[in-house]
Image (cartoon, rainbow, N blue to C red; front, side, top):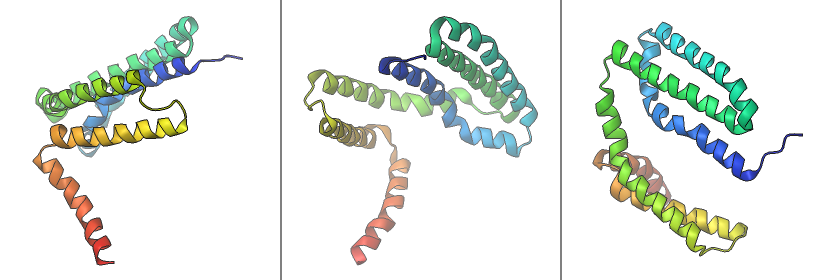
Length: 176
């Protein structure tokens, strides 16, 4: 039986999440590719992604186990992201540099601050190491995350969108 430790699973999870940070913000462009019938270009990119994964997965998993397989998936997904960015630029004429600058540069400082706070909370160990401590730590992180992103990460339009979603619920609860 092949056993894998918690720390190895954690590393695998991080490796598998990395490409999503670049790819998921482009979901609107993915839908546009389908709407504008540019699926042939998309299918070529996905075929190349599958080939990369197939070619890398066997040797990497043989030498590095589950982490090697995750690295193979990471490489394939990064190839997909690069390939789809080429499709977005050529077929849809999207300003990718501007998009990524607006998407990620504005979030860089809040994310760095959250990483520092998270490591500090973890290092200081102010919460007990049991389920209650875990819940308190998670709740603390949610509160800190909300405050940091509300003050530093969201622009005026995004804050108005949050208010427009929350205000009907608030008004409905006040009437009852």
